[in-house]
Amino acid sequence: MRKLLFTGASGFLGYNIRPILEKTYDVHTIGLTDDDDIKINMAKEVPPINTHYDVVLHAAGKAHTVPKTEAEKQVFYDVNYQGTVNLCKALENAGIPRALVFISTVAVYGCEFGELITEEHPLEGDSPYAESKIMAEKYLTEWCASHGVVLGILRPSLLAGRNAPGNLGAMVNGVKKGFYLNIAGGKVKKSVLMAEDIALLLPLLAEKGGVYNVCDTYQPTFGELSASVAKQLGKRPPISIPYWMAWCMAKVGDLLGSKAPINSYKLEKMTKSLTFSNEKARKELGWEPLDVLTNYKI
Image (tube, rainbow, N blue to C red):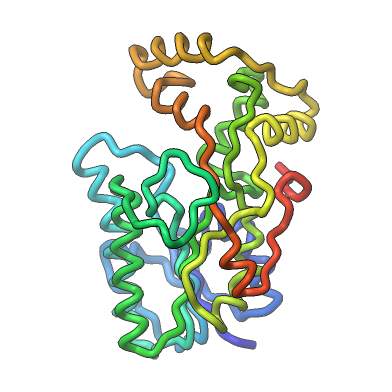
């Protein structure tokens, strides 16, 4: 059985895909918890890796927060970029793997809205999250080329799975508590990917390499997603409010600060479609994604 090193396995992604990976690989993990085989903060130290691995899945990263201070911004660069550099130094000491798969993000494009954005789009993301992921992609591209490693870079959209963080997690909590509202019929579309698809993509990427957007082929609306969540929770589907009402609520939210359930920034994200094309991954890897509306279970 081939050996797989999985960084960041104690997070949401690991929770959803580790059981699948363990059917195919001998999985060892690096992370911040006592459950990890190597417990270390890669942002600050080079991990002591003593085993040669066939494949590395590098999913450790910082996401899902909006930094307010320079120190909070720096954490993104420390974790996402310096953590990647430290991992590669450790792999040089332990033995170069045959393949490395990096979990990046569609945030590297810097798009707030758009339809079926492809991998050809320039990397214009300017948030600390996006910039640090772009830096890590560039470093890995050069490192893997110089060491003869097959590099796969996945740029997932919104991830769905049990205990999903981010916007999907916020939707689930909102529906559960009865205060989630759709705006103008909830017709806005967002690209979503089942977390399990990362595990299904890994062996394909370890063979071929390449840079790919990954998301479901069907782009669900907020209305469809929230109706699915409500049905699973035994709740009524969220009601829809007109845009003008949401706009007024957002302006009040701007005054209330970060605790407000809606503000102008969140309103813009909830009322503009942002979808990505998975055509390259489907064509080159022969991959068909799981249907999110069918497979997403809370």
